[in-house]
Length: 479
Ligand code: ADP
Ligand code: GLC
Image (tube, rainbow, N blue to C red; front, side):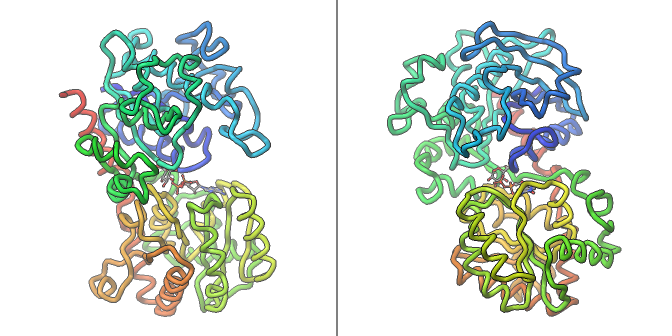
């Protein structure tokens, strides 16, 4: 079976968040099941080196305002298809945002071009290769099934995965014709959303199957609280919607073989984790302590991630004698507030604003616990890295966080199944209580070490989930 992945990010080549991790890992897991995938991405400047070895396999005279070609390149086990459209993608800076921090003004054309090109490849194949299934990800690939829907020829079925329903790709209805979309698609039953075009709604409407990245989030987005206006459509399509948990790449995230750690460790050699702890304390300018946990946060700094709640809970964390290391970037105001907090609690709270992949590994390796107070979280990957590294996740009970962490209440501790701490609702008071509970558990070294070992043994790879995707793909072929 051949699958065409269409996405805007893929680790290790280009990454702003968890989407990249998934696109960087799922094709490998599918390959182990005998399913071969090609991953189609825009050719951003970060991919220029990778594209050098590429072979020209398709071209367009005018793709959303300029010429484009498709380069096929095999790199690091990936079969990439890179869309070289310099008028859309050859620009420095963030892949979604200009230097002013705002979305690129032509994002509709940039990602419509990705979707249009992918639809052409899906419909016509490349050389002797053809896709049996198209797997489109998030709003950036949402138009793929819409373009296929308006073609007058047999086309392969599409699975759309929603990684975050908060990002919908909303654009003016005036763009219908410029984007090459049939006017007939502009209706409530099509891709119209409150007077705009919604790329994500187009995907949900025209894809044969819709998945999202955890079972709990799949239920949540059918409710008004989390559905962001698409709950009605998703409920109507309930029979075709499912939630499949993300896994993580067990080779990239492996405490026994992680070059970003100062000392490797494993379930059997847990002691060495302490050396990484010392390194994190030093890197963040934190006063040493063994009496209370070293917490970390590795996150986009946004209200989705509950960073405001984190800031409000800092007095409690510091009063417990704990330490906190924060790595992140995002909302300018939250950045400023967390930096101010690090000044106020100097030696207790340390902050590095920025994006630093190696440091994120060291923090997973060296921290005792990772804090994730998200208001909503489709899946979340940092709690999975935390489990794998014996860094107990302290998480809001929502989405994939609720599905992957087992709360350390007394019953779960007695039953030997706890792997972290959950809390709800997402308020400073409930979060502060969770921090207290974590510090209390840390003060019981035997119970803490047992929870660490369980966390590290908890299955977080792709085995079960890649099998679930295969089942969905096969059901689409049989339909
Ligand atoms: P989301 O995709 O919503 O941001 P996830 O938890 O799914 O959340 O994935 C976030 C990914 O980005 C993880 O791999 C995490 O380690 C990484 N990450 C987030 N912020 C940073 C940062 N400042 N530096 C390095 N890695 C980061
Ligand atoms: C999104 C979600 C996150 C999820 C990631 C990968 O960015 O916010 O929860 O883990 O996609 O699916």
